[in-house]
Image 1 (cartoon, helix red, strand yellow):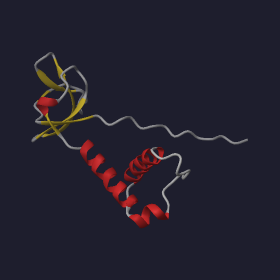
Image 2 (spheres, rainbow, N blue to C red; image 1 turned 90 degrees about the horizontal axis):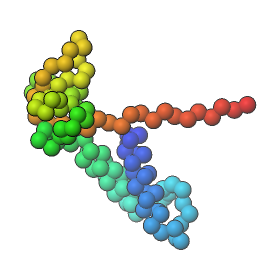
Image 3 (cartoon, rainbow, N blue to C red; image 1 turned 180 degrees about the vertical axis):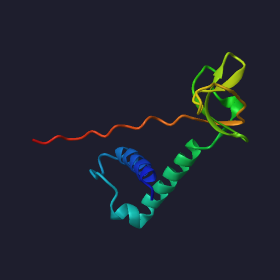
Length: 122
């Protein structure tokens, strides 16, 4: 199981556990979850949620307010935004120029990475 699937599955599991606080004080899944198949079901929910978030959408549904997106077309993939009210432009292009781009599908940009907090001991 990938780290992302495990993190999403644990989040789903914890939400489920919060539904029944009077019955359990568990902090993580245990043998009961594995023996009953509950954990495997939660993993499948996590995989489905991750996959749903990564499905390309038709370009007609993309934001046209200047929000950067990942655009896909038969010519390739680009970091683009809607500009000047009538076309898509590259935001990052190898030579620094902005060019018109006609994507057919899109995805939102992923969230920026979260910097891990380090504990400094003394």
